Length: 159
Image (cartoon, one colour):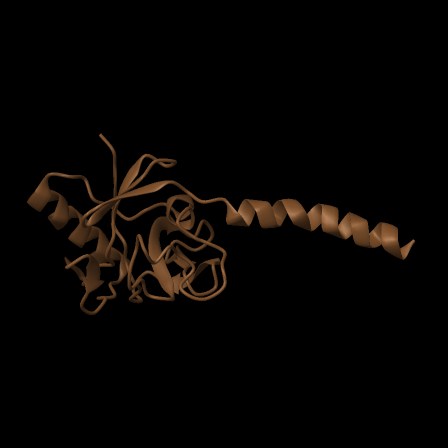
């Protein structure tokens, strides 16, 4: 009986392990990364950092949700791309469930903050809060008030 239970548990957990190791295809191009699976271009650096000599340098600047949207709009005017905050599923698509922190491919997204990043999605039950994706725990939360400051990574759709 114990052996059967053990085999059942292994059979259930093995596919989860395989899914967690599946690599998303992201192509690096200087300060941008192209996400083939989601058909998106990501800024490789968090807001506040600059792409210098093949890595993200500088201090990450945390923003409240309104300011983050305003910054995305200003960035769009500068380079003509339509930068925005990612949806929860788009940002969660960058998560890598691996040992160590942050829970993201640091070769593609170097010096990523191990903590929450804003998404564009509000909490359905409380619009004064929005969803974040946490690159320390690999989890999603909607407990932060929109006026609180969190890290930001901008994205744009491939046109």
